[in-house]
Image 1: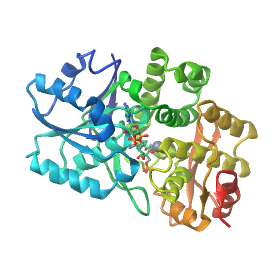
Image 2: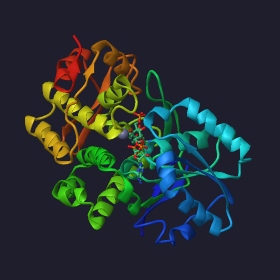
Image 3: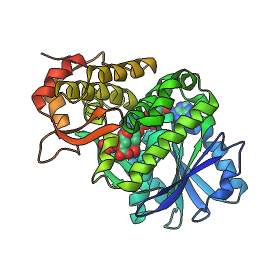
Length: 365
Ligand SMILES: NC(=O)c1ccc[n+]([C@@H]2O[C@H](COP(=O)([O-])OP(=O)(O)OC[C@H]3O[C@@H](n4cnc5c(N)ncnc54)[C@H](O)[C@@H]3O)[C@@H](O)[C@H]2O)c1
Ligand SMILES: O=C(O)C(=O)C[C@@H](O)[C@H](O)[C@H](O)COP(=O)(O)O
Ligand SMILES: [Zn+2]
């Protein structure tokens, strides 16, 4: 068992990384639960695999456990689902002393965090991330939220969990495509951090793709550690935290424009990073070599570097203009000068995005 501690201005909480929540039960005693009444929020797929097993762990310790299961998919990360969860929690009699557990991928960790931060003006919650993406990124840092028709994560809160419990064996049932999309956020983090993290990732891609347990544990640990460092410094994204959005400006616009659920988030971020790299190259900030490094890493991990779809340029631009990082209506992006050297809030001309766009996706005439 390995533990990291995240200390923000509002909270200190543990992130526990272990082979399995089911065969290494020690984790339970490492955590202080706020009460004995909880609801587990999950989706139909993860719920069918793990809900009963997690419920049993709590029931054996005399907790009163209920659950809410929502349909699977990014298209359900929306306010309507949140409202349904509120009604269900009220029906179950969940009060301010009760707590929530998010059991699932990033969609579940984001929605559950949002519900926890708003239900009865806020109740505690824990994250049990089951996708690689949720383990390395979404379960840590307290960004919660849902999508609107206008764009990704436009409604949300910063609300830290009481703890994060990462079980490596959840990944055994994760489909290959979802495993690979999680690697996109790892590639992002390693490019941002550089140094030993980047070298470790680059040298161990085969072992990671083969899901060698020790290597996977190390890369998940380093990803969480890196995210933790950034979140501790800037919990509410008033500065350095925005680097974690590398690849997301274009990535989120692809997700929205192509329809939520058409692409996996990690795939959209992969193509978004290629877009950011090409824009940085055009602006003279990035070398052609580094653009190539992006391409090679993503291709090696089975991630897309362009998309087999077409987009309407106007709709895509409208979506970019909704990005939360923009200042006074003008587009701002995170770009990389070199590995380990991100720069935030760079003004980027829309014309330059439109020049690069046809290299990423077919643009409708
Ligand atoms: N809050 C943050 O900091 C943050 C960071 C990154 C991404 N996100 C958000 O996370 C979401 C993407 O997360 P995701 O990629 O995990 O998507 P997801 O939650 O849709 O999970 C991907 C798929 O894998 C399935 N799944 C999850 N765990 C499984 C398991 N162990 N076995 C079998 N199937 C399993 C899910 O049911 C789903 O079908 C996006 O909405 C993105 O915006 C948030
Ligand atoms: O934690 C962060 O900060 C991130 O930006 C991590 C991203 O990987 C994640 O996709 C996040 O949800 C994006 O947030 P948003 O505020 O740009 O919607
Ligand atoms: Zn992301």
